[in-house]
Amino acid sequence: MKTFVKYEALGNDYLVLEAKGDAAELGEEFIRKVCDRHFGVGSDGILFGPLESHVADFRLKIFNPDGSEAEKSGNGLRIFSRHLLETKRVIVGKTFTVETLGGIV
Image 1 (cartoon, rainbow, N blue to C red):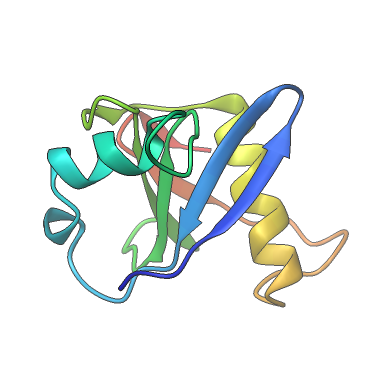
Image 2 (image 1 turned 180 degrees about the vertical axis):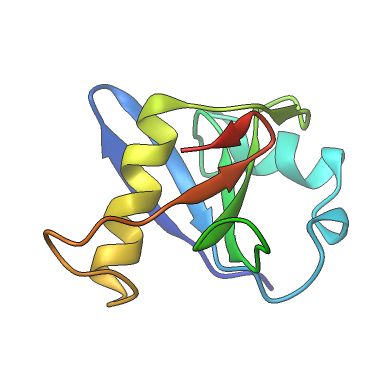
């Protein structure tokens, strides 16, 4: 059983799954089922992290509802930042970086 937190930002909702293993464990079928609005929790995607990064403070994998990995998502990053704040990994006013498939933000 995987645990998650669901957030909404400017009309998009994402599930944040804390990284406690490899993203490959999720699998496309699991992602599709969980994101389904009729038979799952329903979301615009899954934010999997924070992961260790050698080039940024945090690394994040962003998955679309079809199971593919997205390069970036503005609202996804906004939600992930809020999650980092709520879990006391960052503090208000301090700059931090997040590595995504599309680069460092």
